[in-house]
Amino acid sequence: MDDLAQTLTLSLGAGWASGINLYAAILVLGFLGATGRMVLPEGMEVLADPLVMFAAGFMYLVEFFTDVRIPAGVMLAAGAVGDVGLGAELATAILGGGMAAVSHATKSGTRVLINTSLEPFTNWTASILEDFSVVAGLLWRSIIRCCFWRSWSSSCCS
Image 1 (cartoon, rainbow, N blue to C red):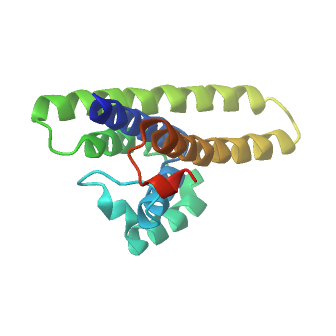
Image 2: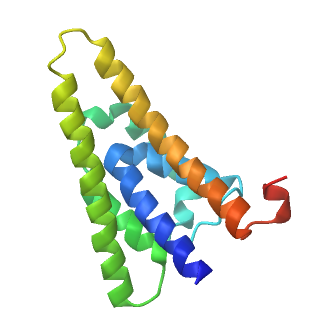
């Protein structure tokens, strides 16, 4: 049951984070995997590759030109479950895409309200807070996994 809960939190968390900022999500998951703070499931280990993290960091800088969050949320969520059967992968992909769509719609709706302001500081603040929420959310997920499920090494929480 713990494996199912861990897989579900990773897949939904990855979907949620990618809906807000895809490249930050990839970069943070890759960093956590590369440093050993998170064991990435089979199929997602590639996120810890330095070349993938560099590409995600570069694209993070140019992300405002493109918008591929929802399809990427589907792919991240499906990759999080690994090889558990086509039905489970498809269900997780749908849920991850749904989480990406909800978080992106929330972000977009908030931006519509913020854009009525004539000064630029609210947009800058919102953008920084969005990026912070992705990093903090994924780090919080890794802390919960570590400290409450004890699935990492004992040195993780000390």
